[in-house]
Structures are given as structure tokens and as C-alpha cells.
Length: 344
Image 1: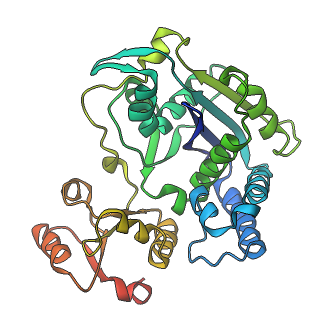
Image 2: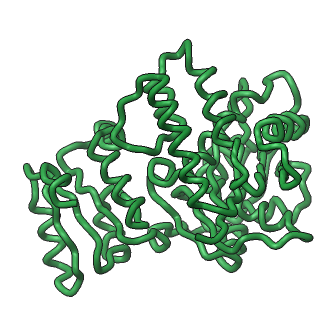
Image 3: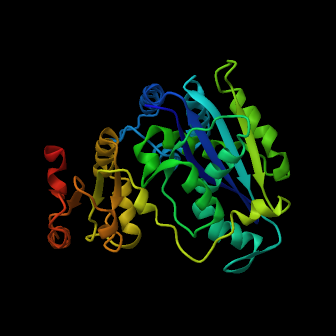
């Protein structure tokens, strides 16, 4: 597999202020990195007695599987060990915050509203854009993998759409090691950045933390970029939201495994993400180069392709069967959730 840049983001809150931390992890050998990642995660599972079906873990699930009094050490360990491989070519980070008001094509907002209500939801796109823009004397990879995001169309979205061949992966940090790594590193950086220093001082903390954990070779490279209220106007203009929503489902990797979840509602649906079933399906999706997503009737007609799957709850199979019947020319496989391990 050729080189790829994997992108995810995290949030650091400090009092009434909030900054976003995006990580673009450039890998020159994806298969070597995945092997390294699985070795690290297997050791973490053993050390902390984590029993999970999924071979990939996200930062949020670390905190739910490790006692709080051991969590800081665990995050430090996993972040350091994941970075300890020569398959990582470079790490680009982007830190974003905004003070004061900002005028956008859809209205005027305070800095907090701008960051929290808009930029946060699509910050992986902004991070990928800044990675590419930073490489004037470097040949950036043209293949990208982004954890799924939502939000409005921006100029940065148009830019990356014309520069990269990319996949947008729902549950990406539960499916692909490279996205899990970007998520874990972004969260680890949020944990080590001080609350009592200006954000403009954060680059030395980020670069120092990364460089001391990457292998000591001539190929080490890290770079931290800022976007904030004092950035050039054209930079801020690239992250302002426009009227229309992005449509990440058009860039999902296939086969897509749709999970029909009508038996649960509201916050109860979060139980699906943390279930053994989801872990097993993420493993299957990774092996097949696809993804797993919750069933969305509105987007389904524009997402489904031949070879996709619908995993349905046997208590209420009607919706899944109806959707299959509405697309008779598509080769969609329906799988009873209680028979997933047998069918796959």
C-alpha cells in the first residue's frame, strides 16, 4: 500500500476558552504501521486487562476501559509506543482558536460560537488542508483517510477535494489503526498542553513531545501550524462556513456495513458503538477495506452500492427488508444481527 495521510482531531478546553488540535499522520508504509499498532494495542490490552472484540481502540474508549487513576500513565504509554516506528514519515499538527467576533457567509458569530458550532465539526478537513499547504518544498501524499465529520462547506473543503484521493470513514478511529493513532495522539497532546500558557506557545510543547517519542532518525519531521484571529484573512476565510452541508457519505469506502438500529433510540444508541457486535463488524470492515455506519434512511439511496450489507435486529426486520426491496437492482446482503459471526 502506498503512503497515506490519516487525519483526526481533538478538543482542549481551558476555562471559558477552547482550542482544537488536529493531527495529520503521514505513513510511508501502512502495512508496517498496522502491524506495529496491533502489537502496541495487544500489549495495552494485556497490561490493563482490556477485553474487547475490536483490535482498534479510540481515545474515548480507553478512558472507559481503564481506571481513572491509571489513565494518565496509559495515555502516555500508548501515545509514545504508537509513535515509536519508522513507518511514520512526518506529523503535522494544527491548533485553532478564535477570539472576538467573526463575519461568515451565514452570519456574525462570537469566537466561541465560531469554533464550537462550526469549525470543530469539520476540523479534520482544516487539518488536511493545512498539511498540504505547508508543503511548498515537499511532495505531499495524494491519498488521505479522514475520520468522519459533519458541518458546512468551506473553502478548505473545496481545496482538499481537488488535491486528494480520500476516504471518509464513519467510526474511522474504531476501524483503521492509522485513524485510531491520529485520534489517540491528538487527545494525548490535549492532555499535555498547559492551561496557564498562551496558545501561541503551544507549538514548542507539541513539537517537543512528538520529537522525543518518534525514532531518532534523519527522517524525523514534525510541524505545528496555528489558525486564529490574528491569522491572515485568506486563512480565516478558508475555514468560514457556507450555506450548504458537506456530504461525507459520498466518500465512504465500500463495502459499507449498515447497522439498522430502530430498536434503540436517543442516547441508548451509544450502546451499539461500545458493543461486541460493533467491534466485530469494524474488524470485518477493515479486512475488506470498507466501513461501518449506522443506518440512515435519508442517505441510504445515495450511499449504497453492490456488495454492501445491512445488519438488522431480528426483532424488527421490516425496515431493512423494505429498503432492500426498494433497491432491487443493488446486490445488498441482509444479515440477522444474531447470525453475524456465522455469516461473515
